[in-house]
Image (tube, rainbow, N blue to C red):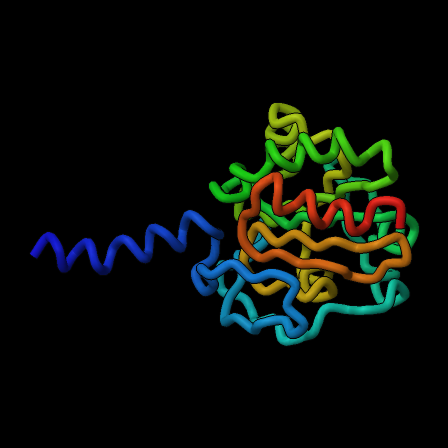
Length: 200
């Protein structure tokens, strides 16, 4: 009986380790077509039941224009303040997500190495209940000294977000998406893609 229980429980635990999603436990990288999923984590203040993302990632910088996101102080921003102006790593994450937390030290180290080479990181917090103050406290303690924004439905759809966090997207200086990882990654994996966009 114990063996039967382990057969069913271990794969579930393995999926939870890789990414935080009820519908996608397999890491994906650099996929041309974005997978559709039935649900994605609800944003702060929203119901857990949401409509599916059914769009492809936008390929033109201009299509990100006009989509408003807010920083932790409540100031409005447009994603084109970064995408299409400099090499950018967009990291969609959540304070509630263990795999997101595990990859943060690697991103902190890489930011220290690549900021001087012109690479910016923009984090989009996809929160279930935490507000900007809690996100700010978490990011300060974790040493996340890059751009911090709160995600919303519009930006999630624009980026072709599949519903799994963390999701990390690499854009070169022209705004072209060159890599995408769904699920947590380590320092060495991320470094390869930082190299692709650095100095672009």
